[in-house]
Image (cartoon, rainbow, N blue to C red; front, side, top):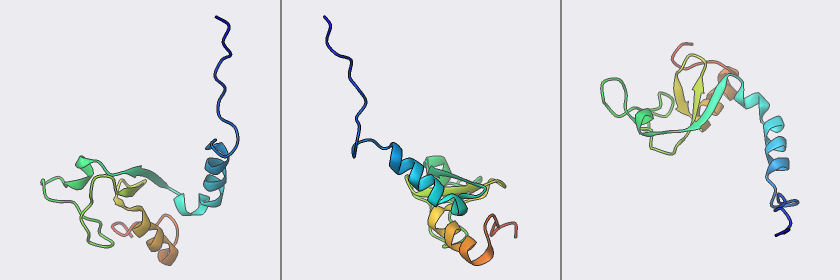
Length: 96
């Protein structure tokens, strides 16, 4: 059985160029921020109350696009990006 080995897709279906492009173009907005998606434990605080974004006061939902800062504060990614546009990259609404 000398069937050819499957080769990785080339061209539009390959995600490599898009990833490289996006990461360089958006470098400024992600300084000191870990990007991830909210899980159930992001949606409740230490007291078991619904956790909310201190910028927009909306409760976090599982799957929300989140940004966590180096101080471990977390926000909706779009909220902290807007905050940084106003206050400067890396600043934390809680620890300012």
